[in-house]
Amino acid sequence: MNPELVEQITKMVVEKLQTKAVVGSESTVEEVHTKVTAEPAASVEVKFWNHRSNKVEENCTSDCTESEPEKEIAVEPKPRVGLENPFNKEELDLLISKTPARIGVGRAGLRPKTDTWLKFRFDHAAAVDAVYGDVDPKILESLSLFKVNTKVADKEVYVRRPDFGRKLSDEAKQLINEKCKKSPTVQIIVSDGLSSKAVEENVEDVYLSLNQSLQSLGLDVGTPFFIEKGRVAAMDDVGELLKPKVIVYLIGERPGLVSAESLSAYLCYEPRQGTIEADRMVISNIHKGGIPPVEAGAYIGTVVQKILKYEASGVSLVNKEG
Image (cartoon, rainbow, N blue to C red; front, side, top):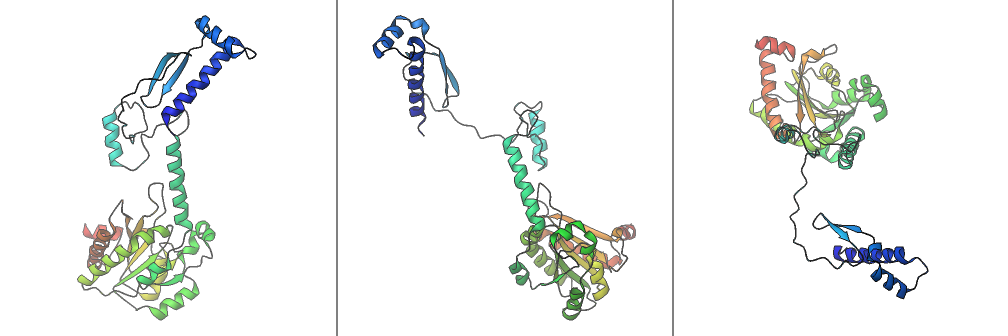
Protein backbone atom coordinates (compact mmCIF):
# COMPACT_ATOMS: atom_id res chain seq x y z
CA MET A 1 0.00 0.00 0.00
CA ASN A 2 1.22 3.52 -0.87
CA PRO A 3 2.31 5.18 2.43
CA GLU A 4 1.71 8.70 1.02
CA LEU A 5 -1.88 7.81 0.11
CA VAL A 6 -2.47 6.36 3.56
CA GLU A 7 -1.09 9.53 5.13
CA GLN A 8 -3.36 11.80 3.03
CA ILE A 9 -6.47 9.76 3.81
CA THR A 10 -5.62 9.78 7.53
CA LYS A 11 -5.25 13.56 7.53
CA MET A 12 -8.60 13.98 5.75
CA VAL A 13 -10.33 11.82 8.35
CA VAL A 14 -8.75 13.72 11.22
CA GLU A 15 -9.74 17.08 9.68
CA LYS A 16 -13.32 15.87 9.46
CA LEU A 17 -13.29 14.80 13.11
CA GLN A 18 -11.81 18.14 14.13
CA THR A 19 -14.56 19.96 12.26
CA LYS A 20 -17.27 17.97 14.05
CA ALA A 21 -15.63 18.62 17.39
CA VAL A 22 -15.85 22.39 16.79
CA VAL A 23 -19.41 22.74 15.47
CA GLY A 24 -21.34 19.71 16.68
CA SER A 25 -22.99 16.97 14.70
CA GLU A 26 -26.03 19.05 13.52
CA SER A 27 -24.16 22.08 12.07
CA THR A 28 -24.23 22.83 8.38
CA VAL A 29 -21.20 22.85 6.13
CA GLU A 30 -21.22 26.68 5.96
CA GLU A 31 -21.29 26.97 9.75
CA VAL A 32 -18.42 24.56 9.95
CA HIS A 33 -16.27 26.68 7.67
CA THR A 34 -17.18 29.88 9.57
CA LYS A 35 -16.46 28.50 13.03
CA VAL A 36 -13.23 26.77 12.05
CA THR A 37 -11.98 30.03 10.56
CA ALA A 38 -13.26 32.26 13.37
CA GLU A 39 -12.20 30.01 16.25
CA PRO A 40 -8.78 28.61 15.47
CA ALA A 41 -8.14 28.05 19.15
CA ALA A 42 -10.80 25.36 19.17
CA SER A 43 -8.91 23.19 16.71
CA VAL A 44 -7.45 19.97 18.04
CA GLU A 45 -3.74 19.23 17.84
CA VAL A 46 -2.85 15.87 16.33
CA LYS A 47 0.58 14.25 16.03
CA PHE A 48 1.29 12.09 12.98
CA TRP A 49 3.95 9.41 12.98
CA ASN A 50 5.88 9.51 9.76
CA HIS A 51 6.67 5.87 8.96
CA ARG A 52 9.32 6.76 6.42
CA SER A 53 11.46 9.03 8.56
CA ASN A 54 10.58 7.62 12.01
CA LYS A 55 9.78 11.17 13.22
CA VAL A 56 6.69 12.77 14.73
CA GLU A 57 5.13 15.72 12.93
CA GLU A 58 4.44 18.18 15.74
CA ASN A 59 1.37 20.40 16.21
CA CYS A 60 -0.53 19.38 13.10
CA THR A 61 -3.99 21.04 12.99
CA SER A 62 -6.84 21.21 10.53
CA ASP A 63 -4.77 23.59 8.42
CA CYS A 64 -2.05 20.99 7.87
CA THR A 65 -0.82 20.77 4.33
CA GLU A 66 0.94 17.92 2.63
CA SER A 67 4.39 17.47 4.09
CA GLU A 68 7.47 18.20 2.05
CA PRO A 69 9.21 15.36 0.26
CA GLU A 70 11.52 13.62 2.67
CA LYS A 71 14.90 12.06 2.15
CA GLU A 72 15.07 8.29 2.05
CA ILE A 73 16.71 6.77 5.09
CA ALA A 74 18.88 3.66 5.06
CA VAL A 75 17.31 0.75 6.93
CA GLU A 76 19.91 -1.09 8.97
CA PRO A 77 19.67 -4.89 9.13
CA LYS A 78 18.07 -6.22 12.26
CA PRO A 79 20.78 -7.25 14.74
CA ARG A 80 20.85 -10.80 16.04
CA VAL A 81 21.09 -9.58 19.63
CA GLY A 82 17.60 -9.15 21.08
CA LEU A 83 18.76 -6.85 23.85
CA GLU A 84 18.26 -3.21 22.98
CA ASN A 85 21.01 -1.78 25.17
CA PRO A 86 23.36 -4.54 26.36
CA PHE A 87 25.77 -3.55 29.13
CA ASN A 88 28.75 -4.87 27.15
CA LYS A 89 27.77 -5.35 23.52
CA GLU A 90 31.25 -6.43 22.38
CA GLU A 91 31.43 -9.20 24.97
CA LEU A 92 27.88 -10.33 24.19
CA ASP A 93 28.64 -10.43 20.44
CA LEU A 94 31.69 -12.57 21.21
CA LEU A 95 29.62 -15.01 23.28
CA ILE A 96 26.96 -15.28 20.58
CA SER A 97 29.61 -16.03 17.96
CA LYS A 98 30.87 -18.95 20.09
CA THR A 99 27.60 -20.81 20.65
CA PRO A 100 24.25 -21.52 18.97
CA ALA A 101 22.54 -21.34 22.39
CA ARG A 102 19.74 -18.84 22.92
CA ILE A 103 21.55 -16.02 24.69
CA GLY A 104 21.01 -12.29 24.38
CA VAL A 105 17.54 -12.75 22.89
CA GLY A 106 15.89 -10.13 25.11
CA ARG A 107 12.33 -10.20 26.39
CA ALA A 108 9.03 -8.36 26.26
CA GLY A 109 8.05 -7.82 29.88
CA LEU A 110 8.21 -11.22 31.55
CA ARG A 111 7.88 -13.13 28.28
CA PRO A 112 10.22 -13.94 25.39
CA LYS A 113 9.88 -11.86 22.26
CA THR A 114 7.61 -13.14 19.50
CA ASP A 115 10.37 -14.10 17.05
CA THR A 116 12.28 -15.90 19.82
CA TRP A 117 9.17 -17.83 20.86
CA LEU A 118 8.30 -18.80 17.27
CA LYS A 119 11.86 -20.03 16.67
CA PHE A 120 11.65 -22.08 19.87
CA ARG A 121 8.37 -23.67 18.77
CA PHE A 122 9.80 -24.41 15.33
CA ASP A 123 12.87 -26.15 16.81
CA HIS A 124 10.72 -28.09 19.24
CA ALA A 125 8.48 -29.30 16.40
CA ALA A 126 11.57 -30.39 14.44
CA ALA A 127 12.77 -32.38 17.46
CA VAL A 128 9.41 -34.15 17.81
CA ASP A 129 9.37 -34.99 14.09
CA ALA A 130 12.90 -36.41 14.38
CA VAL A 131 11.86 -38.77 17.20
CA TYR A 132 8.59 -39.96 15.68
CA GLY A 133 9.62 -39.98 12.01
CA ASP A 134 10.83 -42.95 9.96
CA VAL A 135 13.97 -43.21 7.88
CA ASP A 136 13.42 -43.00 4.12
CA PRO A 137 13.68 -46.57 2.75
CA LYS A 138 15.54 -45.25 -0.33
CA ILE A 139 18.52 -44.34 1.84
CA LEU A 140 18.72 -47.87 3.23
CA GLU A 141 18.46 -49.32 -0.26
CA SER A 142 21.22 -47.06 -1.59
CA LEU A 143 23.56 -48.36 1.12
CA SER A 144 22.38 -52.00 0.77
CA LEU A 145 21.20 -52.14 4.39
CA PHE A 146 18.55 -54.70 5.22
CA LYS A 147 16.23 -53.87 8.14
CA VAL A 148 15.60 -55.72 11.39
CA ASN A 149 13.54 -54.78 14.44
CA THR A 150 13.92 -54.77 18.19
CA LYS A 151 11.20 -55.84 20.62
CA VAL A 152 9.58 -52.42 20.25
CA ALA A 153 6.11 -52.44 18.69
CA ASP A 154 5.70 -48.69 18.08
CA LYS A 155 7.29 -45.33 18.85
CA GLU A 156 5.29 -44.76 22.02
CA VAL A 157 6.62 -48.02 23.47
CA TYR A 158 10.10 -47.11 22.25
CA VAL A 159 10.05 -43.80 24.13
CA ARG A 160 8.56 -45.25 27.33
CA ARG A 161 10.45 -48.58 27.44
CA PRO A 162 14.15 -48.12 26.58
CA ASP A 163 14.83 -51.71 27.66
CA PHE A 164 12.73 -53.03 24.77
CA GLY A 165 14.93 -51.15 22.30
CA ARG A 166 18.03 -52.89 23.68
CA LYS A 167 16.86 -56.35 22.64
CA LEU A 168 16.51 -57.75 19.12
CA SER A 169 13.33 -59.54 18.17
CA ASP A 170 13.48 -63.28 17.45
CA GLU A 171 12.82 -62.58 13.76
CA ALA A 172 15.72 -60.12 13.71
CA LYS A 173 18.13 -62.63 15.21
CA GLN A 174 17.15 -65.23 12.64
CA LEU A 175 17.56 -62.79 9.73
CA ILE A 176 20.96 -61.60 10.97
CA ASN A 177 22.18 -65.19 11.29
CA GLU A 178 21.06 -65.92 7.73
CA LYS A 179 22.44 -62.81 5.99
CA CYS A 180 25.51 -61.66 7.91
CA LYS A 181 29.14 -62.73 7.80
CA LYS A 182 30.29 -64.40 11.01
CA SER A 183 33.30 -63.24 13.05
CA PRO A 184 34.25 -60.15 11.03
CA THR A 185 36.89 -57.78 12.35
CA VAL A 186 34.51 -54.80 12.16
CA GLN A 187 30.71 -54.87 12.12
CA ILE A 188 28.86 -51.70 11.11
CA ILE A 189 25.28 -51.16 12.33
CA VAL A 190 22.96 -48.24 11.62
CA SER A 191 19.90 -47.31 13.70
CA ASP A 192 17.42 -44.44 13.73
CA GLY A 193 17.56 -44.28 17.54
CA LEU A 194 15.98 -41.04 18.69
CA SER A 195 16.41 -39.16 15.42
CA SER A 196 15.44 -40.51 12.03
CA LYS A 197 16.46 -37.14 10.59
CA ALA A 198 20.04 -37.65 11.75
CA VAL A 199 20.27 -40.85 9.70
CA GLU A 200 18.72 -39.27 6.61
CA GLU A 201 21.01 -36.25 6.69
CA ASN A 202 24.35 -37.79 7.70
CA VAL A 203 24.62 -41.55 7.52
CA GLU A 204 25.47 -41.83 3.82
CA ASP A 205 28.55 -39.60 4.09
CA VAL A 206 29.69 -41.17 7.36
CA TYR A 207 29.17 -44.72 6.15
CA LEU A 208 30.95 -44.30 2.82
CA SER A 209 33.86 -42.45 4.41
CA LEU A 210 34.15 -45.07 7.16
CA ASN A 211 34.09 -47.93 4.68
CA GLN A 212 36.85 -46.31 2.66
CA SER A 213 38.91 -45.79 5.80
CA LEU A 214 38.51 -49.40 6.93
CA GLN A 215 39.39 -50.73 3.48
CA SER A 216 42.53 -48.59 3.34
CA LEU A 217 43.53 -50.13 6.70
CA GLY A 218 42.96 -53.61 5.27
CA LEU A 219 40.32 -54.54 7.86
CA ASP A 220 37.68 -57.21 7.30
CA VAL A 221 34.21 -55.61 7.38
CA GLY A 222 31.05 -57.62 8.05
CA THR A 223 27.61 -57.32 6.47
CA PRO A 224 26.05 -53.99 7.52
CA PHE A 225 22.36 -53.69 8.42
CA PHE A 226 19.80 -51.31 9.92
CA ILE A 227 18.08 -51.72 13.31
CA GLU A 228 14.75 -49.93 13.50
CA LYS A 229 13.90 -48.37 16.88
CA GLY A 230 17.18 -49.51 18.39
CA ARG A 231 19.06 -48.43 21.50
CA VAL A 232 22.84 -48.44 21.96
CA ALA A 233 22.94 -51.67 23.96
CA ALA A 234 21.36 -53.56 21.06
CA MET A 235 24.96 -54.02 19.89
CA ASP A 236 25.36 -56.60 22.68
CA ASP A 237 22.85 -58.96 21.03
CA VAL A 238 24.65 -58.49 17.70
CA GLY A 239 27.97 -59.26 19.41
CA GLU A 240 26.56 -62.53 20.74
CA LEU A 241 25.30 -63.53 17.29
CA LEU A 242 28.17 -62.52 14.99
CA LYS A 243 31.21 -62.39 17.34
CA PRO A 244 32.93 -59.37 15.71
CA LYS A 245 36.08 -57.81 17.16
CA VAL A 246 34.68 -54.28 17.00
CA ILE A 247 31.19 -52.94 16.46
CA VAL A 248 30.62 -49.45 15.06
CA TYR A 249 27.05 -48.40 15.80
CA LEU A 250 25.81 -45.28 13.95
CA ILE A 251 22.67 -44.04 15.72
CA GLY A 252 20.53 -40.89 15.83
CA GLU A 253 21.06 -38.80 18.96
CA ARG A 254 18.35 -37.43 21.18
CA PRO A 255 17.35 -34.19 19.39
CA GLY A 256 17.78 -30.84 21.08
CA LEU A 257 16.58 -27.32 20.38
CA VAL A 258 19.77 -26.48 18.49
CA SER A 259 19.94 -29.51 16.20
CA ALA A 260 17.57 -32.41 15.55
CA GLU A 261 19.96 -33.99 13.02
CA SER A 262 22.90 -35.08 15.19
CA LEU A 263 24.36 -38.56 14.70
CA SER A 264 26.56 -40.53 17.10
CA ALA A 265 29.01 -43.39 16.52
CA TYR A 266 29.32 -45.85 19.42
CA LEU A 267 32.28 -48.22 19.37
CA CYS A 268 32.95 -51.27 21.53
CA TYR A 269 35.53 -54.06 21.57
CA GLU A 270 33.88 -57.50 21.56
CA PRO A 271 30.50 -56.43 22.99
CA ARG A 272 28.57 -59.23 24.66
CA GLN A 273 25.69 -59.63 27.09
CA GLY A 274 26.71 -57.93 30.34
CA THR A 275 28.99 -55.33 28.71
CA ILE A 276 29.05 -52.22 30.89
CA GLU A 277 28.70 -48.67 29.57
CA ALA A 278 32.27 -47.81 30.62
CA ASP A 279 33.50 -50.22 27.91
CA ARG A 280 31.78 -48.25 25.15
CA MET A 281 33.07 -45.07 23.57
CA VAL A 282 31.26 -42.49 21.49
CA ILE A 283 31.94 -39.89 18.83
CA SER A 284 28.94 -37.58 18.98
CA ASN A 285 27.64 -34.38 17.44
CA ILE A 286 28.09 -35.54 13.84
CA HIS A 287 26.16 -33.14 11.61
CA LYS A 288 26.75 -30.12 9.38
CA GLY A 289 26.93 -27.78 12.38
CA GLY A 290 29.23 -30.06 14.40
CA ILE A 291 31.71 -32.69 13.20
CA PRO A 292 31.42 -32.90 9.39
CA PRO A 293 30.06 -36.36 8.43
CA VAL A 294 32.86 -37.19 5.96
CA GLU A 295 35.52 -36.19 8.47
CA ALA A 296 33.79 -38.20 11.19
CA GLY A 297 33.79 -41.35 9.05
CA ALA A 298 37.54 -41.09 8.44
CA TYR A 299 38.22 -40.43 12.12
CA ILE A 300 36.14 -43.42 13.26
CA GLY A 301 38.42 -45.61 11.14
CA THR A 302 41.49 -44.45 13.09
CA VAL A 303 39.70 -45.09 16.40
CA VAL A 304 38.84 -48.64 15.28
CA GLN A 305 42.53 -49.19 14.48
CA LYS A 306 43.48 -48.06 17.99
CA ILE A 307 40.85 -50.33 19.59
CA LEU A 308 42.20 -53.34 17.71
CA LYS A 309 45.77 -52.47 18.65
CA TYR A 310 45.05 -52.34 22.40
CA GLU A 311 42.18 -54.87 22.33
CA ALA A 312 40.10 -52.56 24.49
CA SER A 313 37.59 -49.73 24.30
CA GLY A 314 36.16 -47.09 26.61
CA VAL A 315 37.85 -46.64 29.98
CA SER A 316 39.94 -49.77 29.45
CA LEU A 317 41.44 -48.26 26.30
CA VAL A 318 42.32 -45.05 28.14
CA ASN A 319 44.04 -47.06 30.88
CA LYS A 320 46.06 -49.12 28.40
CA GLU A 321 47.14 -46.08 26.45
CA GLY A 322 48.24 -44.75 29.78
